[in-house]
Length: 477
Image (cartoon, rainbow, N blue to C red; front, side):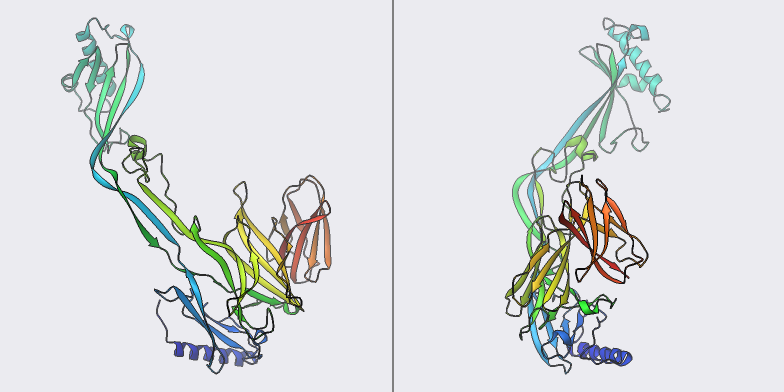
């Protein structure tokens, strides 16, 4: 990625900001506008201690510098004076490859026998007491069987390729590769027609290949993936401004949103690099239907087919366990943990009203049936008491669609099964119930009308046997 001089970058930012402010006839101190590119954003003045907006700037849109174990985010005022600089650690997912060395070359072979049926004297085949006549009769039988598929085949060729062992007759069948008559023909070496003393006959196919033998010493190597920052840029809304359908503002840093001290606060992921974490690498899987696996037992993990693992690939990806609100002194103010079965990055939105902050954390997981589920967990922070974030709704197993929904478009809510009647309530963010619907036992869906709902954000809750069990957020526009 092409680097841009910091000074020029900031001049461009101010120029854009001034132009936008002039066009909208608002001051730079109150301008809330996401800039073009995820690496530069305004910090609204309402979230700064002195009430004046600032600028957040990082090296690039991924938030890290090349060949670095940390990246730096910087905050400047509108006079280009530096206010604060933050260093954030980088998570480096990697893949560990382990393999055994080769000690030489070996031949792997496999014979596949294809039984047809029994032929005897009734079919014109003499008994084993007259092997010469039996042999010639079987040669003629094979010739008649194969002459249509191979016009170059002659009785003389079959006679020259015939031998008798223990009263069993073997006829070598010449073949040409590339005609599509034989399976796995790239490994096919010999084709024989056989007639056993019992009268059973058929074809046998001899396959072989040369492959290394991997039984030497183990060695390992690492492959690093793209570094990942644990810095999070959540969206934030003031309840009084929820009709602003720009969707709120990104709030990477703040002095006043979470408390009113001089220190900056920001949100970061709780994450670790752990075995089995998410990664762009695909796990090593064996294909039992491949010719090498079927014929010789050669797979991605057993490269010489001896039944022993000689190649391993272990993923160490980023595993996200939650979110944290942290101040500039690296002190954790609030923690929003995720369930153990959550997958991928959590996403968070903050909604502020008076002395309370509602945090809505979204995460994804797979249920016992392997279905992909989107889940929401709600927390409340009481700023006046300084208490830790409290979970006010534990988990959400219901989903609503479409979401956002246009006013007048019914919202379909998917529900978990239940043997009893349940109640669906649609609540405004101030807690008032604007709609209540009954859900029949065993129902898995209900349609919620929206034509009488004002534009805004609503919480849909499910009450089962008197207990509120599920919640999801719906936006009506």
